[in-house]
Every structure is written in structure tokens, then in C-alpha cells.
Length: 529
Image 1 (cartoon, rainbow, N blue to C red):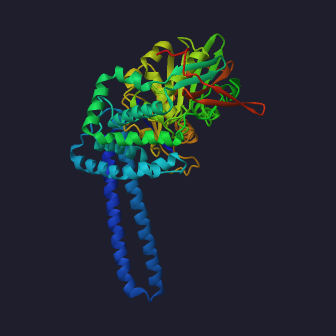
Image 2 (image 1 turned 120 degrees about the vertical axis):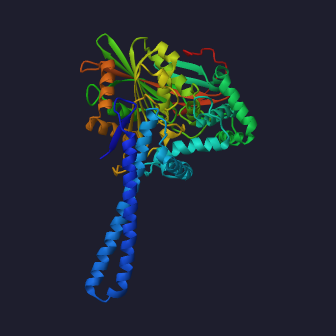
Image 3 (image 1 turned 90 degrees about the vertical axis):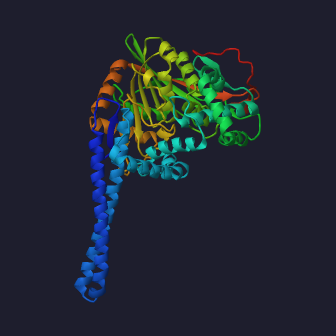
């Protein structure tokens, strides 16, 4: 059965008792290991005198089996001990408690060093990242290992923490800045384009130019870090090389004609009414981002009342530049705390959909989309324009110092501890934000830890186990949307791309290719920022 628990809500856990229990389990595991070693010695000595007796041989085999079971049990106890400590850390981090366990300070330090040692292979080629690429299950510690390891690695590189953020955010800011510089140098200034039922909307793509003047203090810290540690440019430099290689050194790229990608409106029928959180995560599968960006907005009409659901999928390509907004550039911008290209496009879609002030809006996202919807909900400008009532963010890095801006928003973050992706910002869960944690390592599930299907399964498990905090969150969510059997739901689809001055757009009319130029003169910029 999937193990689920919450932090940041009304549930209170005695983490001191939890750590004490973990200590007792660790002692029991050690004693079991000693007993197994003694059993092995007895078996060896017994074998020298009793091998000629048939009963002696049978007894020796049973003893060996017993030793093997003891060793397996000892390993399981050690693993359970580690999980208890991870759970205790999750609660303490989420509640903002200081980790000052006097009697265990040295052991805690050694434990974290152990995790750091495991993190590099976990992050680079290990189970944590592999699980996001399709490997079924990891060890159940990848999330914690990745968060601690990325932060420690950023510190070792010489990164600064940029105020109240993690060092990993400083590293992401450097990477995002270099990515934008490299893309502009190779292709020219980018334009974001969104195609909806009301036509095209064009936006500027200038996350760096907007961020730097508004955060002079952080920018100065970043420049100082670069001057002190010039080697920091090597990592982001690789991103620039990747852009050049993946772009083929060309100033053109084949981009789909957004106006020809598919229907822009459709009627929606839910499995159950009102649709609960697991179904909304499953509905993300209906968003096709294979060729270019795609945002889906659901309009719920119940009599005179209108409510909205905005659905945002995750990363689709590792390419840091190029036309796809669901790429690595958005990841870096999100972790860096910038207004990412994807945020701009989602807001443009909300604007074109006709969402009015005061109408309730829920934001749902997975992976990169989880980070995008959390950032949008915490943006004071978005809050002023839209009435965001709830956020469901699953499997994404969302601990970006946003809690103080989400006081009046009903937020649920969902994390699988085998999934390394939510920890890529180097931060633990944030104090005051309701987070649903899950340990699915014993489920033998067909889904990878980072998959949307896995997170749908986790939300189903939370419903089955009737977690009070999650039940309360769901009740508030459904009440704000007001969906019932009389509700008519319409899906609005928006297709998006990042385009450059000399880029060509390829569509099809009959059997002949249609080629048109995208002008670098963007006359109609639409943005609430």
C-alpha cells in the first residue's frame, strides 16, 4: 500500500519521538547483524564436524537460511530507519523547526555527508533521475539526496545564496542568464507567440532583462560570485554550446504553424461530478506538447457563475533554446525565480480566454508546470488581476520562498520521495504550505516515480486513506469552483512557441508546403506585467 503523509497543514507529528524510534530500530538492526555474523561462525564450526551426518547437513542448511533471513531483515530495518529520518526531516523542514538535536548532531552530520556522497551518482546517472526517465522505482531517498546534494554542490562551486533563497537558485539564475544571452546571440531577440480561438498574441521574451533591474541586490551578489569564482561560467557555457549544437548553427528552425495544430474548443465530460483532484491530474494527459507548447483552460459555467481550471504540463525537451517553451530554459528561469516564458504564455492564455476579475480560478500543473502554477499564484500582479482560489502542483520544484504570497490561496503540493525532480531547486518543502508526501517504493507499480499516472495514484491513495488535511483542501477547492451536475464545461486550447527574427514557419496546404516569415517587428505585445 502507498504510504502517504502531509506537512504544513493541521496534522502535528512528534518528530523527536519519531527520531527516537528510528534510533531504536537502528540499534535492533545492528544487533540483528551481529547475531547473523555469530550464526555464520557457528555454521562454519559446525560444518567441520558434522558434514558426514545427514541430519547435520539439513541443520546446517536451515541455519544458513536463518542467517540469510536475518541479514535481509537487518537491511530492511536499516532502510526503514532511513525513511523515518527522511520523514522527520520533511516535517521539521515544512514546519520551520531548527535541526538542533544535541545528542545526535554528529550522527546527523555524518548522515548528511552520506547522502551527499550518494547524491552525485543519484543525480547524474542514478535512480533518482532514471526514475524520471522511465525506471520504475528508486530507493525512496532520491528526493532528499538530490536536494541536499544540489545545494552542497552549488556551495562547493562558490555560488552565493542570493538572500533568502538557496544556492541552487543562484546557480539557476546564472544558467538562465547565460541561456538567454546565447540564444539572442545566435538567433536574435525571441518573441513568444500564442494561438487561441481569438487569434494570435505575441509577447516579448526577456526574463533576464526584466529580472536584473528589479533585483539589483541579487544581481550584485551574482556578479560578485562570478568575479570571485570565474570557473562558474563553465557550467552555463555548456548550455550555450548545447544551444549551438542543437540548433545546428542555423538561424532557422522548423516550427509548426500554430493555427493548424488542432481544434481550439471542445466540450468536456468528466468521469464524476464534481471532478476531484486525481481526475484533474489525469486530464493533463489530454494536453499534447510533443511538437510545440500547449496550454488548456477549462471554463465551467453553472448558471450565471463561471469558474476556471488552468492546466499546465511539464518539460518536453532538454534543449535550452529553440522554439519549444516547455524546455530547459523555462526550468532554469523558474528555479531562478524569474518570470519565465511559460508564465507569460499562461497569463496570455488566461487573458485571451476571457477570465474576469473575481471569477474563481484553479491552477493545476505537473513537473515544470507545477513550478509555473505555483509561481503564478504567488505573483502579486497576477493576484491583482485574477482570483486564484486553489493550486494543485504535483512532482515539481515549488519551494521557492513563495509561502508569504500564498496566504489566501488553497495550495496542495504533492511529492513522491523517490522522485528527484521536486528537489531540483535544492530546497525542502516550505513552511506553511500543505504538502502531500508519498513513499511508493513498495507498490511494484508500473509507473515511474515522476509520471503523472503515479501522482494520480498518490492522490487516489490520499483519498482512500482519508487524510484530514487533504480532505479539507479538496472541500475548499470544490466549494470555490461550484461545479455540479448542471455545470457545462468547455475546453479552450492554446498553442504556443518561442520564435526568432529569421525563423521560418512550416505548415501545409494540400500537398504544398506553406512558408511564411515571422517578422522581428512585434507591434502587438500583450501582457499584464
